[in-house]
Image: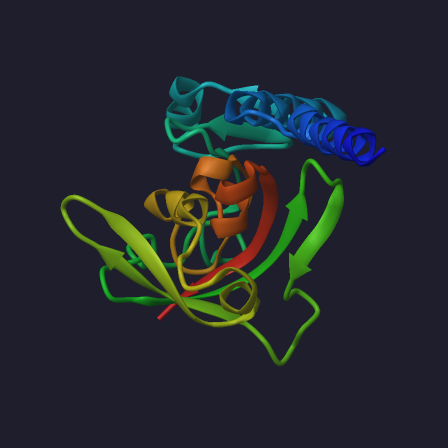
Length: 204
């Protein structure tokens, strides 16, 4: 009887083990799920993806619901390149980010796979996220020193947030689809893509 009980317990444990294995996903499967999620988000949002050549032909600008997919894999829609005058022209085109600058950010973060808003400081008048921009000949990085992103994900600024700073300046507003490899720590760990509305980059 004891042997039978032991045998049944072993079978039960093995069954649980196989079930756990069946429910886990490989990294390749997670990447495929991410790719499908981004594709569905683009379709459901009626986004028009333009080529980089068309983007540059438009003076590095996007219009209507256009997004350009950059070499990094990030999809970017530029709403505003910076602070503009009443005619829509940049007040100071040279007011761009430099090594050591601090950047304040108003943003919202939407989980593409979960289909829900996951983080935002747009309605938090008392809180603004801020990071220091670091640039060298071989790397670009950002380090959060205050805000929700720091509290939730740690000090590393998503690489996807830094991509637009090569095209826009102080006061810019953009929308981004950021794949996991260019995202915050949780995005990279769980292979989750995110959609960001960056209401404003303020450089000082």
